[in-house]
Amino acid sequence: MSGHSKFANIKHKKEKNDAAKGKIFTIIGREIAVAVKEGGPDPNNNSRLRDVIAKAKANNMPNDTIDRGIKKAAGDDGSVNYEYVSYEGYGPNGIAIIVDALTDNKNRTAANVRSAFTKGNGNVGTPGCVSFMFDKKGQIIVDKEECDMDPDELMMAALDAGAEDFSDEEDSYEIITDPDGFSDVRQALEDQGIPMASAEVTMIPQTWVTLTDDNAIKSIQKTLDLLEDDDDVQAVYHNWDE
Image (cartoon, rainbow, N blue to C red; front, top):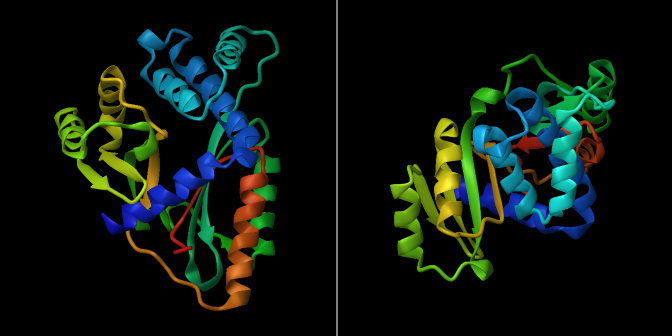
C-alpha cells in the first residue's frame, strides 16, 4: 500500500486547500453535467450522478449549487455539451503524466495541454504510452479528524462492502476498490454515516520516480501548475514522488 498512501495524502491535501475550491467546483460542475446527460437527473436511478454528488458534498459544494447544476444539465437552456478527452505524456526524466479533461472545444484543450508539456520540457505521447504504468482504482479517503470509528471496525465495514484494500495512514484511512465496484462500496459506507474526505475513481501509479535535479523539479512543477490551472482539465495523474 505504500504507493497508494502517498498518492492519497497528496490528493487529500490538495482537495483540502481552500485556494483550490473554485477550481474544484468547476470540475465537479462539469462532471454533474455529463452524469445528468448520460443517465438522467434522478440520482436514485443514476449511480454516476450519486457518486458526483457525494464528491461535491465531500468538497463542501453548497446543495443549491448542486441542484442548479443538475437542473441546468437536465434542461436545454443553453447548457454546454462537454466531451471527455484524455492525454498521456512525459515530463522530465520520463515522469509519466495522464491528463483527463472535459471540454467543449477539443482543439483548444489539445493546444493548451501540449503547451503545458512543452513549457515544462516534456512532451505529449500517443494514447497508452504511460497509462499501463497506472492502476485504475476506486479510492475513498476518510479523514481521521472527522471519523470516530474504530479503525478495525471501519476496515471490516469497507471489506464487507466489497473493498479490495484498506490502509491506516498518518492522518487518514484509505479504502481501495475495483473501479466497477466503487459506487456500491461508496454507497454502503455513506449509508453507514461514514464521512468521506474524497471518493473517486482514480489512477494510482505502480511505481514512483524521484527527481533530484532542481531544474527538472521546476520543469515538472511548471507543467503540473499549468495543467491544473486549465479549466478544461479535470484531473492530472503522475508518478513523480513529490
